Each structure stands twice: as C-alpha cells, then as structure tokens.
Image 1 (cartoon, one colour):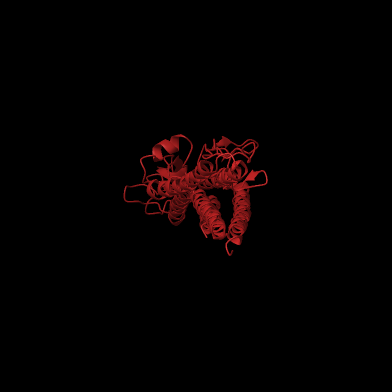
Image 2 (cartoon, helix red, strand yellow):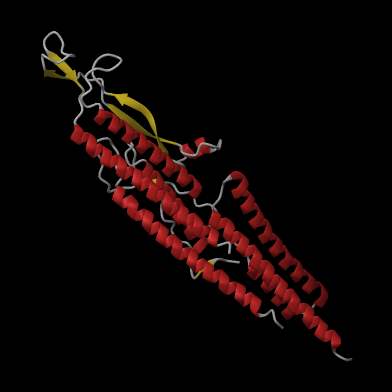
Length: 96
Length: 113
Length: 145
C-alpha cells in the first residue's frame, strides 16, 4: 500500500547530480523508474479496490489510503515532469 | 507515499482499531452466550512498520469475572472499548486527512510557474 | 472480518436477544396457565444462545469462523423446562387432579423481569455497536475526499 515516492524523486535528483556523466540515459532511466512507481501505486490502489468491492475482503480505509497514495504520486510526477519540460523549453529559447 | 506520521503508520493503526472493534462487536453479541470467553486483539509491538494484514489472534482476556454459565463478558468494559476505539479512529482519520491535504498543497504549490 | 461483518455480528446479537425477550414475555403471560393444548400446565421456555458465524453469504465464512474471525450469536435451540410442575392445593379448580392439586407453571415473575432487563440491555448494546461501527465506516469513506 505504501508507494515509495522517495524512489521517484531520488531517481530524478541523482540524475541531476550525476548528469554530467551520462546525461541522456540517466534521465530516461530516472523518468522510467518514476513512471514505474506511479503505475505501481495505481495498480495497488486498483487491486485493493476490486478486492473490497468484489470479494468483500479488505478495509475501506486501506483502499482509501491506497487511492490517495496513487493520486498524489501521479500529481507529483506530473508537476515534476512539467518543471523539466519548461526548463527544457527555457534552455531551447536561449540564443546560441 | 508513506502515510506515516512521525514513527506511527496511521494506516496500520486504523487497521488495528478496526480489528479490535470487530472483536468488541463479537463480545457484545455473545454477552449472554454460555461458555463464551471475552476476546481482544493484541497490540502490535510498534506501528512504525507497515504490515499489510494485521490478523488479530483474538486472545482470551484475563482478569474478567466468570459467571456460572462460563461466560465472562463484561458489558461495561465492551461499551467503554466501543467508545474508545471510535474516538481513536476519529483522531487517526483526522490526522490522515490533514496530512493528505498538506501533501497535496505541497505538490500543487509548484504548479503556477 | 471487516467492519461490515461486525454489523452482521451485532445484528445477530439483536436477533438473539429479541427472541430471548419474546420467550420471556411468553413465560410471563403464561405464568398461570394450567391447561395447554398438549395437556398439562405451561412449561417455561428459555433461549439457548451459542456462538455462530454471522455473515451468511460467503463460502469463506466457515473458515473465518473457525479461525476466530466472525463470531456472531444465534439461538441454537429453545429449551423447555422438563422438571415437575409446581403443585398447589386447590380442590375447587377445574384442572385439579384426584387429590385436589393443580399443576402450575414453574415461573417466577421477578426472575423473568430481571431476565427481560438483561435481554433489553443486551439488545441496546448491540444497537450501540452498529451505530458506532457505521460511524467508523463513514469516517473511512471521508479519507477518499
């Protein structure tokens, strides 16, 4: 039920630090890992919900917290992604 | 996203309270069943670790007076626990709600640029 | 179990106490019934409670029950007092036997009333449990917001 958002954010920050070594692939890996975490959270929330609705097993609060976790993970990911995109656009605007 | 608050995993705490309340309901329903022994849920050692399924081994509570028919349910105790668990559940959910709200506004904060 | 199961458990408690109360009122109403259809005086009835699984739907109920999960209650049988009835000397009574004795039910109204109060209290306690559990489920749902 608990998603490691740490995993997503730390992946992104280590990329920034180790960016000089291998810029392209490091970043892609970090984004990939972050997406993985978000998907993980979503599927956990889904399975908790269907367990409760179809089997009647599990608790309401567990499903609720899993759903919130998934939503927050996604929102965070989106914000971070937006930041990167606008940073990239800023860079591209710079006259060379 | 870890729903821990300090060293307590509130989600697990809610699960513990839920299991406990279920057992209280059983005790109340069986308050007049001959031979029935009051059950309780053991408090887990710590709430800092996440455990997906808290299965209560309902243990037989010591220190309760037994009636002639073997039943040892004390309705006053069960009524008290009923109220206590409810209040604690309320507290924990309020804490969780405000935590979720804080996380959400922290995330949204960076939005407008 | 789950909180929903707890509601079933409390409902089973209400049902059992209700049946118990009904039998008690029947006892009280028949405290002086000397003649019944089956012959003989009315015999005191008592509800026998026993622990039983409360959730009726799932196949997993039995497993849960044996592993200490859902423990509701049910009236497994109604015991009828088989002991000898109380005999009172009333020669003029229509149900008097050859020696002038009439067989009366062995029912003590005070005892029955105390029993009735206990059943009533148990009934109320189960209602309180349902209300509290419903409250907790409601709060859990608020976590979705």
